[in-house]
Amino acid sequence: MLYETTQAAADLENMAKDRAHASLEKDPSPVQELSILDIRSVAVTKDDPGNSWTLTFGCEGTSFVHEMTLSVQGILRMSDLPPVRGSREALQRRVMSLQQQVHIIGYDTETFQSALWKFYDIYELFSRTVPGNALLPWDPVVFTEGVSISAANRYFSRRRDVFHEEDIPFDDVVDPTGSLRDIQHNGIARTADNEVKYFRCTEEKGTKSYHAVSPACFKIGDILDVQIGIIAVPVKDDKMKMLPKLRAITLLSSKWTQDANFKTAIAKVPRTTNRKAKRRRVGYTVDDQLDEDLQKTTVAVRRLSLHQSDVHASMVD
Image (cartoon, rainbow, N blue to C red; front, side, top):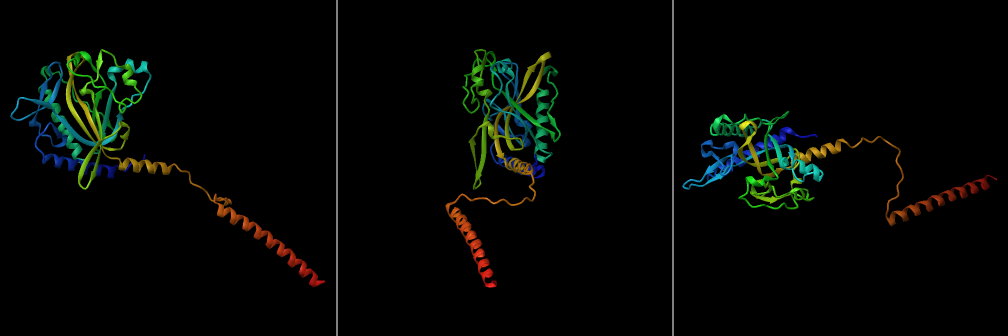
């Protein structure tokens, strides 16, 4: 794909800086830009019930804490988004591993690099909070273009882990074929914690609007805003693993993806060689009449030529 990396990276950086600047003008809230996160404003809190830990934001003047949602911008490098594909039997075998997932990259842009450093600061906070030196090292996915920020969210949770939460039914946007509804059973649940929201951002006269879209809207190369929560969950051997949990995806720009797709399509068109022009009939009545008149004129000219030849011959005689 003929993707304009430099221009796309420049657009990404401008969008990320604009969002960071706008965030600074707002009061502190449970939704913040990852690249400018004040690590002193967050904490790692043990979930109750459960053995997991969550990055949280405390509301000043209250005893309430909220899950911290972090917003980060990047270019979509890889994704696994609805709808799910596969036979009912195949999906049932891996029901608890089915997930929505994205990997975004930043092509070494300044703001994306800042987000990566903040992400590591969060890892350090988790590692110094989770007891027993149990937290595994942060292991980001690395592509040829650089380190990515990845986030995922499972379609289902085990019912015993979320027995106190209500089920949320699948809609036709996420599950258009009914495949997920077909494999759901009493031992698993889909709650608000499993839900991922999808948006497109449009701007008119300086005002941004957000509209719900289908997951099919997102393509490799698009510039996205991804919202994530950070948790640490138990894994084998009494260890814990820090995971970014996908909360929402917003399409900011598809310009460079569409541009690359167009250039790729044009490049595939075979070059034509000079060929003898073919006479074609145009499908209009007026052209049919013109063609008929042309034929009559040609015949008349030929007859005239013959008559002239006869006259010339008689004059010679």
